[in-house]
Amino acid sequence: MIFDCGDEAQRRDGVEAARAAVRAGELAVIPTDTVYGIAADAFSPAAVQRLLDAKGRDRTMPPPVLIGATSTLEALVAEVPGWLRDMTSELWPGALTVVCHQQASLDWDLGETHRTVAVRVPDDEVARELLSATGPLAVSSANKTGQPAATTAAAAQEQLGESVAVYLDGGPSGGGVPSTILDVTGPTPRILRQGAIALDVLHRFNNTIEAAAGA
Image (cartoon, rainbow, N blue to C red; front, side, top):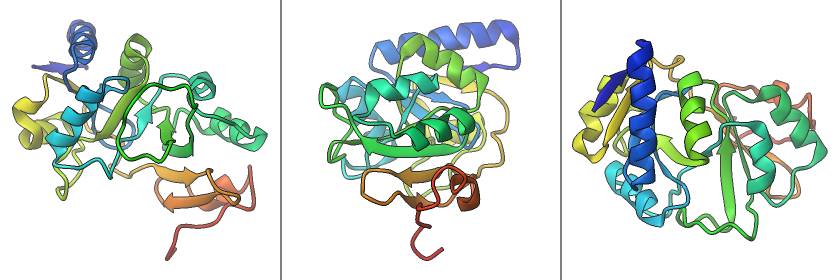
């Protein structure tokens, strides 16, 4: 099913259909501020495996987790330094993904994460509306591995087809530039992928952050 979220009634019905699909262990495609994402219940190992299978990806490439509010970060990660709290408070919602050590008590299986989790709050109202209803979602770009990331719901549907139960069409995504990924699990924070947020912006919060390799 595909829902046009530009129509208020379809948006309401679509978010409810996506919530029900996620709760049933199925997949939904959602708009974000970067590219479209394929989403699964982060706390359902079977659903996460279904996501990886749909993309043609193995467990060595675990999906990030999207959350609906910055405050949820504290519940998912083991430690949030003051500078990172300031950074996420200002830059979320937005195109910044942070990789942290996960809470030891979390009962989930995202793949071979080595007890870390990559977390982001998307700057998209439809995505956050769904996240407020579902809680954290495992979300990866809505494309087959090796193919271009989808910037429209139609492009996602063309690649993923019936492996996804619900498609939420929020119009073209915000330029298709991926999020910047910042790893804070080591003694020195470092950028794993340079994306929409530049290093000089991150340096306002911590000037020891290292640039991505080759940058």
